[in-house]
Amino acid sequence: MGLYHARNGQPGICDRCGRRVEHGSLRSEVVRGKDLSNQICSECYDEDHPQNWVGSRPVADRENVVDAVPEPSIVEERSLFGFNPVLGAQARARVGAVQVLTP
Image (cartoon, rainbow, N blue to C red):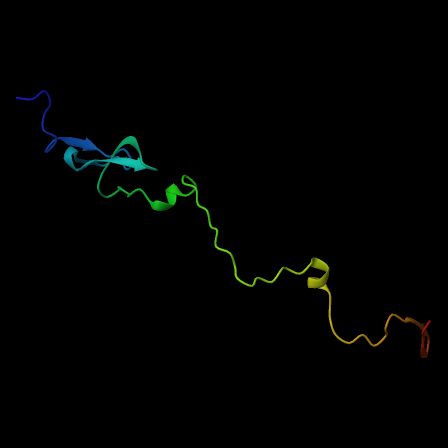
């Protein structure tokens, strides 16, 4: 006879929800490949998700864009384009009439 009792049929308590379940159905909780030593029931158990591993391994994205167009400067991006009827002339106004003077 062994030193320990068989796990099957023995009561156990889930460390996450506190429910009383059979000890043999409890599983260890694993996060980022490390065992947290928590015994979790099958209803609470979550697989170790791949997004938990983001940043743990180096990722080099060396994919270059073919024929890339450089970004415009902020001034060019925010400026208006099109016809400029005044061409830099100064406009002065009087009550009742508008007079445009060009230098």
